Amino acid sequence: MKAIRLLLVDDDPLVRSGLRLMLGGADDVEIVGEAADGEAALTLAGTLRPDVVLMDIRMPVLDGLAATERLRAREDAPEIVVLTTFHADEQVLRALRAGAAGFVLKDASPADILGAVRSVAAGDPVLSPAVTRQLMTHAAASGREERTAAARARIGELAEREREVAIEVGRGKSNAQIAATLYMSLPTVKTHVSRVMTKLDLDNRVQIALLVHDAGLLDEA
Image (cartoon, rainbow, N blue to C red; front, side):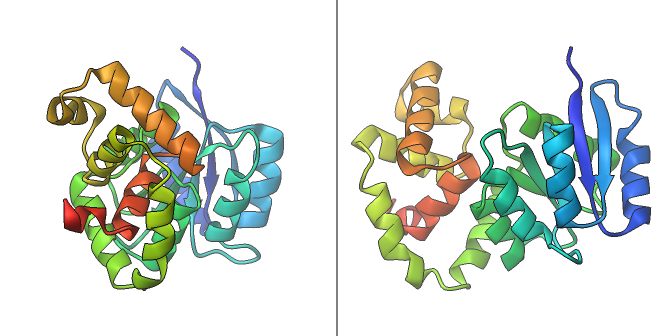
């Protein structure tokens, strides 16, 4: 099995050292490099081609938010997991809107951090339903009114069944749970999720969930 190529980005050398110790022993992970700021991360990502980037947010030169936005705009963008000390923070939300696949706390267990790396490498976001609800609450407190009209207009581009699937994604449900709720086959759910992301120009399920919340669809359902 091909190892997951991982880039560590944090301005604290002790954090990077700890991450290397925690993750370096995994058979399916190869730490290909380290960066102390976002600018260096952009350069290394271009040459090292990581599959996943563990990205701190608060860094000198170029912060992790700007680095995430620029990395995710690239054609062969790596998956990004945000490293943070906060469960729900405006900068974490902005990173998720920019295309980060999820976040992990810096004090999370080695197993949780490794699990996050493996999940996003496999195409699965790293947000539990409980964390999703917390983020949505934080989003509501940070100017949701300004985004509602734009979000509703985008959701309006979806067919009815795509809209229903998007709402269930917004509730934090897995594809299997959505299939059971909407009486669809699993392949059909996967197809609808892919179509939603394509139509709305989104990178992952996290962005679908945030858009559904911005549109106020969970309040109506």
